[in-house]
Amino acid sequence: MLGIAALAAFLYAWNIAGSGYASYYSVAARRMSVSWKAFLFTALDPSATITLDKIGGFLWPQALSARVFGFHAWALTLPQCVEGVVSVLVMYRMVRRWQGPAAGLLAAGSLALTPVAVSMFGHAMLDGVVVMCLTLAADQYQKAAPQHGFHVLRQTYASIMLEAGESVVTLARRLGHSSPAVTLGYYAHFMPEAGSKGRTAIDGLLGRQGDQHASRNSPDSPQG
Image 1 (tube, rainbow, N blue to C red):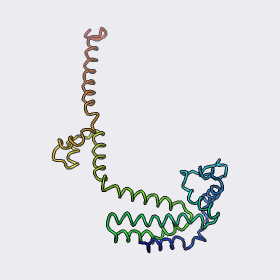
Image 2 (cartoon, rainbow, N blue to C red):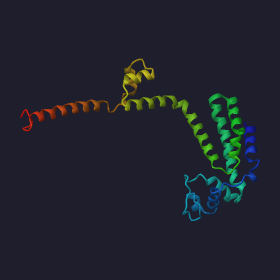
Image 3 (spheres, one colour):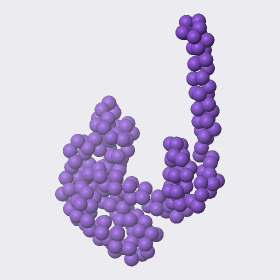
């Protein structure tokens, strides 16, 4: 795995000196590298009066790199190279946990050698941090799934169906329960409005009958 990570680092950084700048965002990274106020608000000017149309923090890695190493194309690209290597390592860990070491190595190698990934992590683009964050999120979900995954999805589905008014008989059939009584035993607490629906129906019926009775006894009615 270390060999694949080293190969990814080489591929992503081999043209780092000529990677160039990302117009508009590189200007913001430069301003953020000289002003902590602009850094905090992800702004285009040192006074932080013009902010970018993205969530704050997406340019922090580039701005920190430019503050440490100076404003150069390679300094802005360096964080993307690191993010790419992190993504490859996390991909290996995620797939290894799921399908074993061989599958993990195959997945990590595929990500490292994918041309679009080499281009993305080798330039001062903002997509690298998105891919890294998505990979980390998928890894954490995959880690939690054996403990809570399918059962939680099943409960979520049942609760949404019951709250939407689906019948217990239909839900029992979809969940594969032997009888609606089994479904009620598990999910009755997701039906807080069950009693109120009946009361509402009775109240509506009694209300209509009361209105009809009052109408018949009215002096203005034909019967009156």
